[in-house]
Length: 230
Image (cartoon, rainbow, N blue to C red; front, side, top):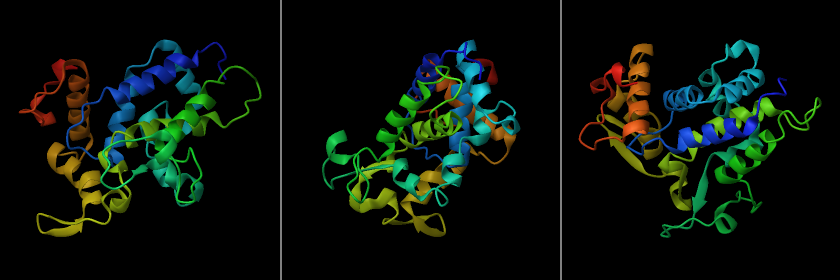
């Protein structure tokens, strides 16, 4: 590891970049997470970028976005990680309390997306302190990057009975589905036209512009944002 690289800027910029994203009606499927991670990595300091490069596996090609959905891919292998993607709050209460709400179905506290962000942030803060790390910091980076996208997806933080919108039946044009899938996938691909690399780039340009300058409510289609604004 490159011990000279400082982790705090990495954490601050990952958190700030994700938190600064606007909150239109986007869900975070693979494309959404890709865009969040690409924007975040582009806003890192040199030291933080070096730390990310050091922690990413070589096959990632120094692209954090290529592994930004890794946490979803391993949910069924790492069953313990499933509750870390969301927060359930009591039905009818539009408030969140860490002590009350951050727990899994067995009542184990700290096992929610906010708790996971706290945990993996703490782990990453140990980066560079020892030649024999106590934690798997590559996994910590991938979990943190993914969960910062999840916590900004409204259906990942909602009423317990909704189960993230999986209990709410809806029709999306001619397709019968559940609200979770509409928010997670269909709105993003329909609204942003994210079907190939060119359109994904347009979505990234759109969100970068929104982070910097705010997003006019009347103009939310990334194809209307010129790359000159990036």
